[in-house]
Image (cartoon, rainbow, N blue to C red; front, side):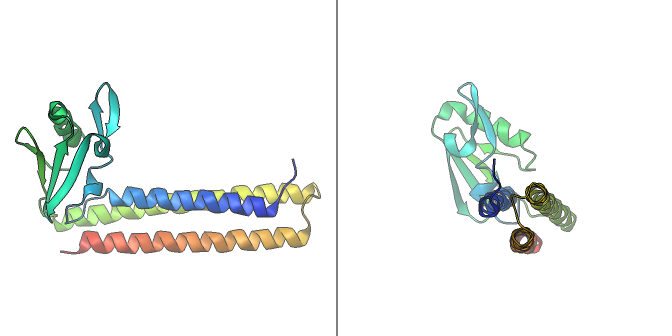
Length: 188
């Protein structure tokens, strides 16, 4: 198999984009002071003999900034939805009126906000580590290709610079996501 610097860079870019996208999806599910459908849409509900994402079994609405309403497509699974919410560690007790499940968002304490910011910071650091691992892997392949004379010294240096620039670019996105989410959590 021959080594192509362009193909390696393209593959690394794809993987790094996926890592950043994964982080953004994770951050959407972290509770802030406002109600948002993202808090519950990926909670898994045991319905119809399988685990299903909440967004696949119910309509999720936010009628006001402190309330989430979940209307199951099949009213028979309303208890399953309640169980899934309680098991999700959201810290919110669902209210069930037989047709809808309501989640009233209690205000976050200062201590809880700090815990959430710390959790966001940990998630961001995990993704930074995965990005660095991707860089390390592609550069290891490039080193081997250089030893095998499939890559020239100049091509190797160029690829190294491109991958390092790509890493900086993706880490900046992570930093921006951290700042945005931290500001959301700390806002009163």
